[in-house]
Length: 306
Image (cartoon, rainbow, N blue to C red; front, side, top):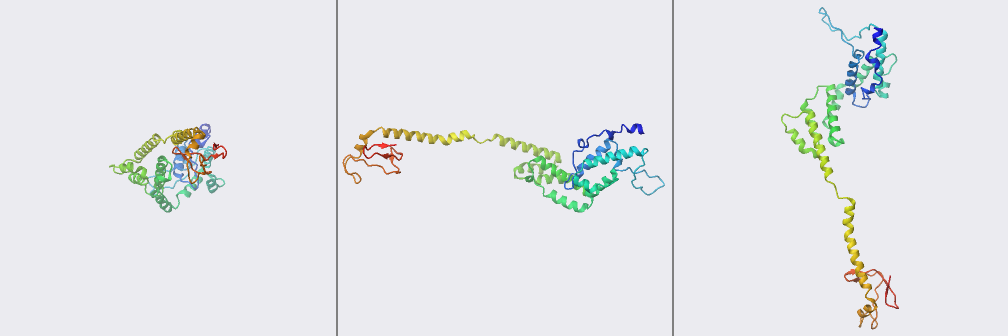
């Protein structure tokens, strides 16, 4: 027995987090996932009886069921070593807060397991009420994508099964459809009118496919680039500016005589023949249908100056 114990499968486990990636916490809802992974791990390494003792078979003459008792190991030293290994697995997969709640000296793996179980499975009625309320009010709007939403629906249904009667599969699918938003009204209506209702995983696949289709559709509908929009906005301005400069150049090329000729004769604002009607500063003079710049004029030569 001592020789064979050297090669016990549980001894070769070096990192429990490789097979049990879930960390059990007081404030999380990972208990059922943790229990399932931990029991599977113990079965694989032949130490399940360290947390869930085997029930001895009853004899024909006995009418009562014997309680679960820890079997007496053939080699106590080997049993104690394996029990300490399982206890380390428990300590290594729970949070510090949880560890402080269950830790005590000379504790066996079964005692630690039972203390954790009592924390999460006591007051089942109160927990069932809380979970049912949470399940009935779950909505897609509170999640970033369909996958996270479906995962939470399934997890809550799993937790409800642990504290009371399991939900019917159709009930889970209908709640999955009820929590969708207006973006998925069409596919939700198609799922709800299917007879019989699809399974949870079929409905999940349909919703994920619809999400991918919407993302692809949004990617194909791209707005115009910044350069194109800028060119569209600046083109009329450049055209107008060019016309304005051309008109101004034509105006400036008329010379002195043009001014003198356009201001001949008597006028209320002209005091003599050939006098120039100087524009007022900052006045909006219009030349050839365009507004000219506000130039200042030389009163001695009658020429505009820049």
